[in-house]
Amino acid sequence: MPRKPSSPSWGKPPWEIRFKPPRPQRDLPRIADYVVVGGGFTGLAAAAWLRRLAPHQSVVLLEAHHIGAGASGRTGGMALAETAAGDQPGLGDVLSGFRKILETLEVDCDLDLRGAWEIARSAPKNQARSESPRNSPIDWQDSGTLRVVNQVPGGTVDPGKLVSGLAAAANRAGVQIFENHRVSRIRWRKTPEIEIEVGARQLASIAAGRVLLATNALSMAITSLRKGMHPRLTLALLSEPLPERILKDIGLAARHPFYTLDFPYLWGRVRRDRSVIWGAGLVHSPDSNDLDAVNIRSAESAGTLSRLEERVRQLHPALNQVKYTHRWGGPILFRDSWKPVFDWHPHSEGTKNAIVAGAYAGHGVALSSYLGKWAAEILTDQGPKLPRWGQINS
Ligand SMILES: Cc1cc2nc3c(=O)[nH]c(=O)nc-3n(C[C@H](O)[C@H](O)[C@H](O)COP(=O)(O)OP(=O)(O)OC[C@H]3O[C@@H](n4cnc5c(N)ncnc54)[C@H](O)[C@@H]3O)c2cc1C
Image (tube, rainbow, N blue to C red; front, side, top):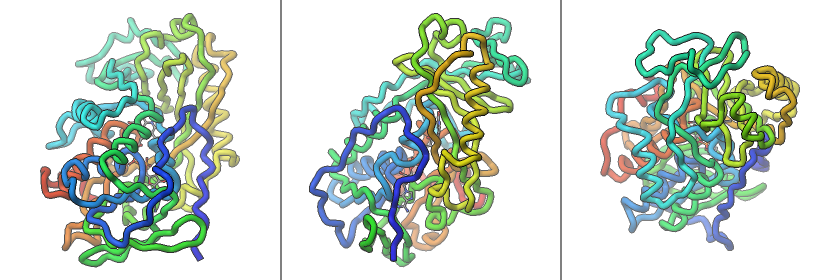
């Protein structure tokens, strides 16, 4: 008996995902040229791009919950260059590629690439692109004095608008989007047979010409991501909108998003309404493969969130009385090398009919769409080969 695909208890982020698949939903076809599993940034961008490259072929997107239910609808929204492990051979310019994808798909997500600040308790050894810490607008107390040490390419998006915009683009392009369709198993054949739990009870299946698995930190039994992979829930807070004078006092008036280079980790950004997102802290799952089971009201998550609240209050006297309006978490996948996964699924090595993309760590806002497009190019035999750095076992 299939289990009910209830939504995870990860709290509610402050933005809405306005996209709803057209109703009435059509019946799931028995066969599709391309099946994309996962309705986050990776899967949505890939699905939309597949239809651009192969307009006469069918593309089905299967999402276990609702579009954006994973990291993409819960992200901090900092758009960063490169990967979490830095630049990689043949990667190209992620940020300008991301911008072009948004322009081509006509996605408006308030993209603002004014640069991101790296902050740290001491100056980094390589000061090439650094700001002088003496002129740092940020001067916070947090296990030492946190100051701006670098400005790097990057900026921000509105995650709700990015998820909704990519989903609307995929829908306009003719992708058949099915929410509440959880892939439970794949029978690896020349034409993979995908088994699906629909809602609470029904089972269905679809034969897929080619597949993209874009479930990131979730459903790792299906993606076969194991060795050196660490799925976690990462947590975030939103403060009430702060007066401009407080943003000036704390050094955030210029609206650059920021993240620490050293530990304890801290990241954040100012939103358009002057509220501030602050993030830090990771929560383990009771069963390391099932982040769905983590509840942000659990003792571990609640404790991590309270410590983060207290840390933010202590950063600067102007933040002492700040009130928080939202607390939430989202799934994130790290791997030991910090490089993303972008590879053929191990069971499709011979047939090369399924790609796995994910494990971007906290660096997936721009990279996920970028690799989603690249995956679509490879699946339609129109793109550069999969890079060595993305190999599952590298
Ligand atoms: C709190 C938080 C803050 C972050 N901040 C930043 C940031 O500021 N900058 C940055 O660059 N990155 C950040 N990240 C990382 C970034 O958000 C992710 O790398 C990116 O969203 C991953 O997109 P995705 O589409 O690959 O995965 P996801 O968005 O996780 O999508 C996977 C989808 O697959 C679905 N799914 C899972 N299993 C199945 C199944 N069996 N069948 C069907 N569907 C399934 C899920 O429901 C989900 O919708 C953050 C992540 C979190 C959680």
